[in-house]
Image 1 (tube, helix red, strand yellow):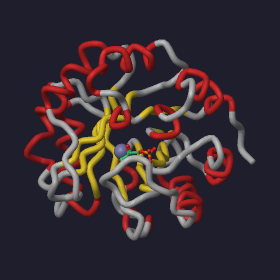
Image 2 (tube, protein in one colour; image 1 turned 30 degrees about the horizontal axis):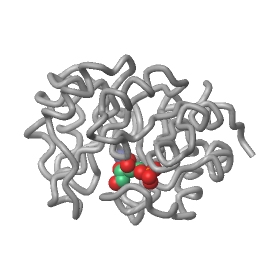
Image 3 (cartoon, helix red, strand yellow; image 1 turned 60 degrees about the horizontal axis):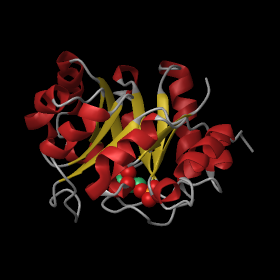
Length: 219
Ligand code: DX5
Ligand code: ZN
């Protein structure tokens, strides 16, 4: 499978949101990555339902919704109603993860679990067969534009090995400090989906950067 690019809307210009959503529509990107932060699970607040619904109204590609919030169970149906195609919850925020994943599937979305940089992939051993995707955080969540944590590569390799045994169709997504400079190493480690905020929206031509990232191959 060709790798997927998911531009992070967090780095868009919110005063020109429709323009930026249409730029992604017309690009070679595959998904919209939508970061929801509650100021409790992470030390930042991003945006909520009204903005997400505004994105959905114009988006011609799936919405990959990354919930950096405590108590995600409380809002799963509302996020699906607001247009989420894929919902990511944090391992660190879910006491009853099995139940949360069931609820996401029941609501009609794909289910993904995110791991903070310090959380070992081995903790997912017993939930892996239920998941559509795992998101490996390559920065501490909360802000765009941070530096990539190199240990991520080892985590992706280990997760790829685990998935080969019990869930070979699992997608591995990487989020934080991803750019054209580390994409080929991440591909070689086994990542399938690449979230990028600053690398795309900070580029001179976001359209060309997306196309270039899509053309990369494993190192
Ligand atoms: C960070 C978010 C990321 C962020 C990525 O907490 O989950 O999706 O927007 O931004 P960059 O690519 O700039 O690190
Ligand atoms: Zn994210």
